[in-house]
Length: 172
Image 1 (cartoon, rainbow, N blue to C red):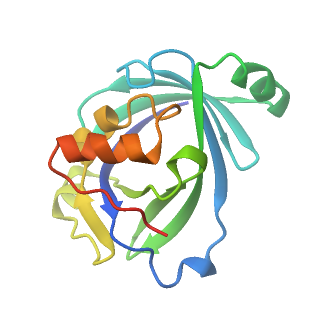
Image 2: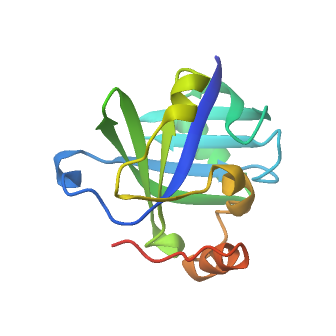
């Protein structure tokens, strides 16, 4: 399956008050080679769904994903072949007629939280006004700042943002 993503990505100032009303989805992502390459090859567990993903870059806001569904056993066999992986909890939160994907990173990245919003068209994407709990927009640097996400710590992520003039604080 081939799909185009139109998204904007933000840091999070604080978690929304109603977060406990939503059930998180456990996600594990593994990278086979360069995690940030335009043509990255990844493997993903999203709840009970398993995928092999090949990405193509159109722009910072738009990427094409080729997604192949695989079996759990295939995922377990292939995850060991990845060069790095990371885990996070994803909450799908309604925002007017949109859905926000709130990612709370685990393990070495504990305290790192970001949110992305996907759009059906460019007009909606350009006219989007983020809610108060969203932090600064990182769409343009998202893929670059997340390079080798499976091996960095929160402190290293904080330093990456600092070098860009952005203060990253832990969100609890």
